[in-house]
Structures are given as structure tokens and as C-alpha cells.
Length: 344
Image (tube, rainbow, N blue to C red; front, side, top):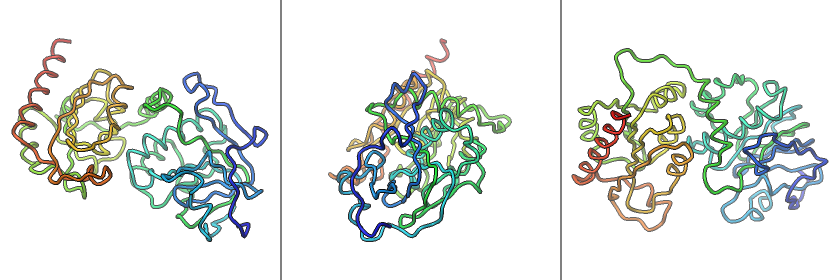
């Protein structure tokens, strides 16, 4: 837009509008910023450029290093989508089409902005990535955010905001921070969905089904065994977000294959048992840190992958094999959890 690449600028200056989050649990780790006359692009998850052609590296994320973000090297960074008077900027690289990152990275920042900085929150435009997902729509409905206030921009599009609010992407904490837990606990109380008569959701299996990656070979056999133990088999893809939240709030034992569906353990009661079926090869520790923050009893059962891949991003996509030994261990862990809850 300035006919030359933007310059690097680490942080906005205080005069540009930092808003202190008056929340003890944040302890200054995450800040909300209010900026004026900003260009917001969605290129590789987004960038913010001020009127001096400076891109704030504080709001960038790029695996090869922030100075190598495409906003500094691409000859074309986007078609101007329009001008907004008041806007909230919430684009992150991983959140595009990824339920885990939507719920764990993006939603808490939206809740933080809603609670601590904007009295005119519902009147502000919300700048989001493209395309739209059903769980995103469900989330915004629970927050009473009108669809007409949502502006979605593609990677090579940008908007100008006269008054823009944005929060830091991440805190300095390596584990799941307490401020996210507090805000997500408040959010789950907004979910109201009808109970299904005659169904007890104390024990839940989150069905993986025919996903493109990380399917469980012979999953139907496992489904049969768990149903015999009184489990309800829940397919998250067929439920609204409110229905998923209500079900997980009831569950005392949750069994699931490593994947985005396990994100919903943030809605479980303290002390609930979560059993994750995961690969013996290079599975990331996303859900154990969440379980620790929510005081859940987290167990893992290791399953061999169908093929052994050395690269981490490929290894975690391999289908998993259900072995006799893994079934034996799983049923044993379920029995131990059932006895524990019976004694309470």
C-alpha cells in the first residue's frame, strides 16, 4: 500500500493506545492494544501496518522467524477490502479451519477484549480469517455477535480500521495459562442445549470416524466394547457447540483419540477422567497441559501408527492400530475410574 515493504516495529508506543487488562490473573503477560488508522492484512495469519508503513512484529507469527513474515517480502500483500470505523482484529495463523486453535488461542483473546476493554464491543466489526466454520458461527452466536458485524478477509485482502483493538497473541507462559481458564469457564455457562431423554452422559466416547488423518483402525470394535460399558458415543461433527459443551459438562469419563475433539475437555468438571488414545510416535502434548490446568485426571494409552514417519508433522497424521493390549489397558483404566467415582 505504500509502494515499498514495511519496516519492522516491535511494539506500538504507549501513546498509540495500550489498554491495561485489569485482571489479576493476567499479571501483565497479555496486553490489549487500541490503535488508530491501521491496515490489517490476513497474509499468513495476519499483520498490522500503521500509517508510517511499520508492521508491528508483536502481532506477527511465522515459523521461520517474524522478520521473514511474507508481509515484508511479498510484492503484493492484498486488495483493500474497505474502511471500518471500529474493529476488533482476531486473525491467527493456526485458527484458520482448526477447532483447537480457535477455542484455545483465539476465543480467549476475544473474551478478554470483551470483558476488559470495549464498552461498545457489540457495535464493533470483528475481523476474522476466511473461510467460515460452523463452530465459529456457534461461538459468535453464544456471544450475541451479529453476523453482519463479522468481516472475513482472505490472505490477499486487507482492511483499514480507524479505531482497532487487538490483543497479544500469546502469553509468556509455556503451559495453559490461568486467565484463559477463567474466561472459558465463564463462556461455557452461556451454552444451553436440550438434554436427550433417557441418555446418561457420565461416560462419553468422542467418535473420530472417517477423518482425513489419524483415524483409528477398527474403531467400530472399540465403539461396541464401550457401549457395553455404558458409554455414549458422541460425534462432535454432528452437534452444535452448545450441545458439545452441555454433554462434556456432564461427563465424568471421556475417551477420545488424539485430535481436536479433545479440546472440549475444557468444559469438563474438575476431577473428571480423560483417557487419550495417542500414537507412540511424536504426539504433541496439547491436551495434558489443559487437563492439568482444569484439574482433570489425564491418562494416555499409546497405539502403534500404521506407518512410522520421522517428521513430526507427518507422524501425528498417521492412522492408529487398536491392539489387544491397548484394549486391555483401556478397560482397566475405565474400571479404576468407575470405582473411584463410586467411592466419592
